[in-house]
Structures are given as C-alpha cells and as structure tokens.
Image (tube, rainbow, N blue to C red; front, side, top):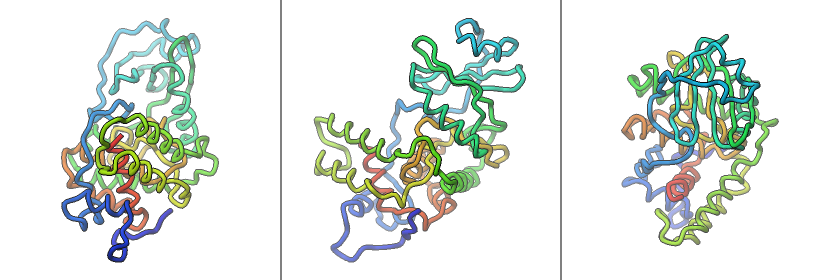
Length: 312
C-alpha cells in the first residue's frame, strides 16, 4: 500500500497532470491535501447499490412458483418484503423461515460475480453466507443469509454523522488490510481502465474536467496502470448502504459485485461520494480520510480517479 504523505509537494514547476487536477478540484489547493474534494458531483447513476435511500421493507404477495424449483423450499413458509433500492435489481427480504434472508433477482449473468465475491469474503468473516445462486430463464437469482444489523443509512446511523464517518473510514481500512492473494478477481483496476477507455472513446463532445478532451483523459488513464503497490481487496461499490453495522460495529459488507483486487483510491472515491450524497455535506470527508489513514493513500492518484469517474 502506498505510504505517500498528503502533505508532500512537488518542486515548483514540476507538478504532473494529476497534481494539476488535484489543485483544480478545490478552491484552495491545501484543502485537497486535507482530503476535501469539493467538486465530486452528486449525479444519478444506474450502478446497482449507489442509491441513497434508506432500505425499505414493504410486504408483498409473492408466488414462489415463479422461482427456480431449487429456491422454493427456502421461502415456502416465509413472509416476503420488497426491499429493492435499484431499478436494475429486485431485492426481496425473506422473513419467517429458518433465518432471515435476502433474494436478489436481476437479468441473466449479472449476479454470478457478486455471488463469488460474497462467498469469498464470507470465508473471511466479512460478508453474508451465500445459500444459492441460480440461473433460470432470463434471470439470475442470488440468495444470501441476512447479516444482523442495519446498513449505514438505516438504524439511526445517520443521526451521528461524525461517528459514522469515522467507522466508515476504519471499516474500509480494515477491508483493504485483508490478504487478497486468493481473490477470484485479481485484475479489477485493469477492468475499470478498460471500461473508462471505452466510455471516453464513445464520447463525441467535451469531456468534463479535461480541457484537453479525450486525449488528456486517456493520458490520465495510462497513469493509473501498472502500479500494484496500490492494489488491495476492493469492495468496488463502497457506499454507506453497503456497510452493515450493529451500533456502529462492523458486521460485514454487501453488494460486492464490483469487487476484486484493485486500486484502493477507487474505493476512497466512492466513500467520499456517498458521504456527501447521504449526509448532504462535505463536512465529514476529513473524518473519513483521517480514520482510513492519511499516510496510506496518494492525493494525486485520488484526484485522477475523481476526475475520471466524474467525467464518464
């Protein structure tokens, strides 16, 4: 893991493109070095999990015969609640069976990775147990045991935002400290860079945050390659609704379909994004970064991920 200090400055006239971006991402360059990314944009997204609402539970009638036969016994005597927070996935909370469960239903081939990453992290005590993964017709089905506790935007956690931001930073630091040697998805940074490259190549107009347009954006992408010293076990969608706690004590992580081994700054970006989105303020970013560890990330690299992710 990188040990670059936030207070490190390059000699006058020697700032790289990433440092120029870092300076442009705040009205005060020193504020960025303290971790305050004023221009992270609050924008709608179609990525499952990045929605800010409190998890709902609305009881619904449900015909278990619509499920694969292998899943029906789990739900025969249970009450079913709609707990969806995304248009891309239907999430059902199952109550009254042997144990509370969640059943996620998506289009075919969208949940296999989440199932594998959840099973992998469950083996490390950090994710729910996977009971079943099935494909049936046009759909994927992922059934997991429900972790005890509430997500980061439920259970009163938002009422103590300073404590929440601190635990949020500590939890990410703990995840990133876990050995990822046997992770089933070892190339997450390369996958992200390819996704971003395709996005930029498909853009026809100006690219937000990059006066030099596509060429400058692609140059920034190149700077993110080949730096294994930043690689950690990524969550991949590190937002408050995907952290489960009991009285601010970490129970585990959910919605792991974007995880793998990759650049720690990607998780930091989304951690800062969700704090602003869910708390409606920039006031808690410093607490989050303090408790993650100021010496354990590179502000210039975080600036690059910020600029690139905001522009796609």
